[in-house]
Length: 183
Length: 144
Image 1: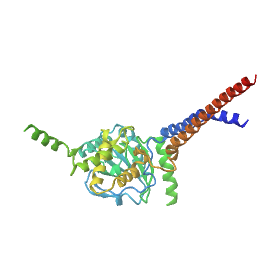
Image 2: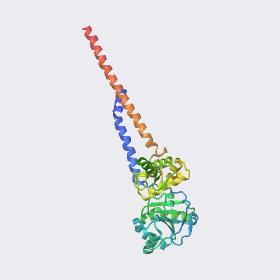
Image 3: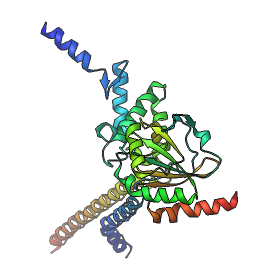
Image 4: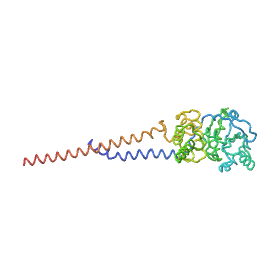
């Protein structure tokens, strides 16, 4: 009797192995769908940096960004997605819900300025990052990308790609409201 | 003359990749190995060495400058992982999240071994039975 059970178990082994494989592959594919861009910098401090602003070429460091909530947007004049999300940033700037900092990523100053003259400038300050050093420290994949930085300089939310109204309302706004009450 | 020319050409060609000038062949080799270890964040299944994406260029530059700062390979790996996550490492670390990844092949190997040993045992049992049968026949044949 025991031998028969053992035989059955033995015959079922390849099936069990296959089951295990399917199980882990299932988990793996599930993860891949949602975590193509995992956020390693989430809840980490905004990196130290030292650069210049786009228009007045004044020195700007991390210290200039802490103290209030900031929406930090990585953009460039060559970036198509940035045109798509630009309307939302102009709206946010007009409603004054949050101050918006631009990081001008791998761009020429002239192109960047022209782009802003044509489309309007929602940014309170613009940090230039022509060689992408700051963006590497921010774990940026490409423009556009947007971060919510709290008054202590901690990154609280991150959007890879175009910041849609839905993403803003679901990922950014609740954090802003909850934490404004806290401070 | 030709040899001298050839040698001087190869000498001129070796020290630089991406416009970086290397101090030694060892440094160039180390750089080459490091940029093969990291996944380009933009073109998912390409490493930094094989990608033309702007972000890959920036990350190669980061690797080079970290090397120049005297950082060890492990420190460079950590530096990039802290910014881009485990995703950037082609060779995953052993963490609670990846034990399944490292463990599954071992478990499958053990299962397969157990299965194969089981089959062999079964076969042995059958041959034994047959020879037993024969022996029984022989004995019974002798008797009848």
